[in-house]
Image (cartoon, rainbow, N blue to C red; front, side, top):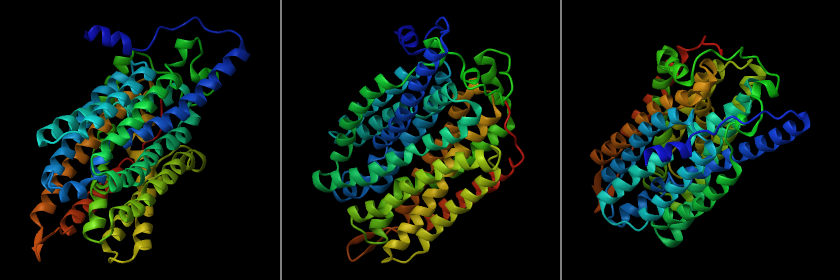
Length: 447
């Protein structure tokens, strides 16, 4: 069975090269646009099947389905499994047919969400959300591999930045649409709704994504675009190039910096709606509105980051990383310090944080390391850094749940959660991430 699955999902054989320049151009450009738009939309929808728990926390608490600590455990299980899956599936992506690999992953994640919406037992929530973490881990690395296969070195920063903003589209859909579904149909709709939608999206991706260019008789993208700015491809098999990733100290440094940045990112993803409801007294719909600024500005920040670093910094990512890091930390601090009753100040804080985190996800979560390592091992780079990132995110979830549970008080028979210790933890991680990233200031792109 394993051999059958491996054969089904591995990249196809190289076809005889096409010789007609017009046919090559027509097929290449059609595929490039189809793939790029599919990666943006597809990766965005992955998030709607991942963040349902973040939106439904207050309804789950009110219904007595799970406690804060239990929700922290369930969230951590997804993120820890996701971390391992990022590493394993990242390495697999370098050998995979991306069209099949990514579309099937979204389809299975959608099915898990649908079943989750009909579950009653805590152990069921844990098992299903762990499975969801594995299928979700197949979204990012295959996307990066596909971008490296179909877009040349001088295009990659801009395309990567726009693609990386896709997760903000998914987060925006989750925070607004899922909040509406939960408000009208209950917490279970927060999982079954995205599951049904993503089932359809997965079927579309199966038709619109593609394997690597050579399987269609097309030349390597560097030859097609006459872009050899990264130098000739390094010698060695894919497995040998993957080993270079593990020997690079900069990849490990960037991985730890990314892990700390993901503490801050998933703190806001997974707890900010509850914070807005508990500490600032918003309704779920109002909290969803405030959170909407985060993914919108995150998309702007991500889309601008790659283009800006390509155009104004000669594809160097150091100074833009510093600027984005300051914005991320400042936005989180403003959200915490702004007193209740100032909705637009909270919206600004979310927007500033989102803009900053959008750029950092581009730089720290992949692009800097992808730049400095062989492109044939891009999936391994993304998988290794992704594993560290989501270990950080998962650790954040259970620590945050513990901090909130251990600092709650009962006032007039009502449980009040105090968020200050959690925010100190989140902001501290953000500052440490920025300092660690600064040590890679002089790292230069190379093939």
